[in-house]
Image (tube, rainbow, N blue to C red):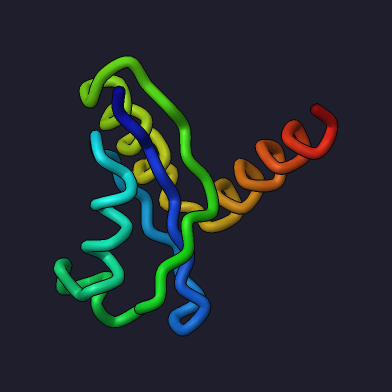
Length: 88
């Protein structure tokens, strides 16, 4: 199992899009400053996750979102997912 995930830093007011197989470990790494970019925005909060069969599919989704280079796209995606969750 793999995940595409979106994190948010209130400190930087930025989103981070990634993919991994162990989401709990990866979030921990982001919040201890393992990555140079994410070390500036600690704490990072998980905003959205999508589950995939394997890492290849999760990374394809990550790249699809990153290619948009759009904060608006990410925020609309988050709203859409949260709306579905609320209605369920």
